Image 1 (cartoon, rainbow, N blue to C red):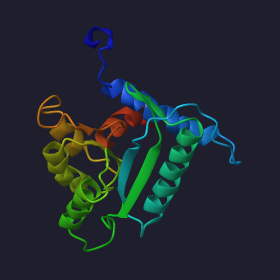
Image 2: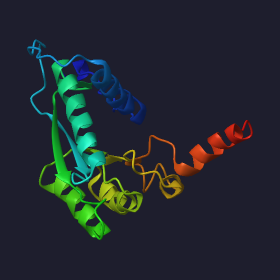
Image 3: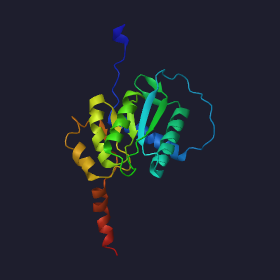
Image 4: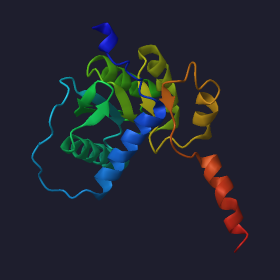
Length: 195
């Protein structure tokens, strides 16, 4: 019997990001009308995405709207496909307050830890938005072995400099999928020669 079992392939970073990217693309172009759930078999355990967003700031509110829409669109299509079958996505969003004046980084760390321990998230797909708060939370990513994706507000070159020092070791659960301020300035500089 054991010989008949297929060996399950681990989900790679590239495959995971393709799934998340496809979700974002689907959310951006999909119509917003109700659709019946018509998929066949869905695995029983949902995948829980967590986001620690600054909900007192428009960027946090918009990020929550975007990730909520993405999750709805993914679930309408039957969830995400993993080696053990299709899984619906659940979303847990907590207020990180990290863009409010005077709020210490420690509050963002506590928020991310609450997502991991209380909400039992599988991935952190958004927030904290402040670069230093996100960097401070990387210790939790390693401690609990949870993937943490840097949000669009995490624009400091320190993120790439830090997680780039050991991307397969200490920072293997920390992903930055966007440019930083330094990279964008380098790319924009040639444009100034045309003025």
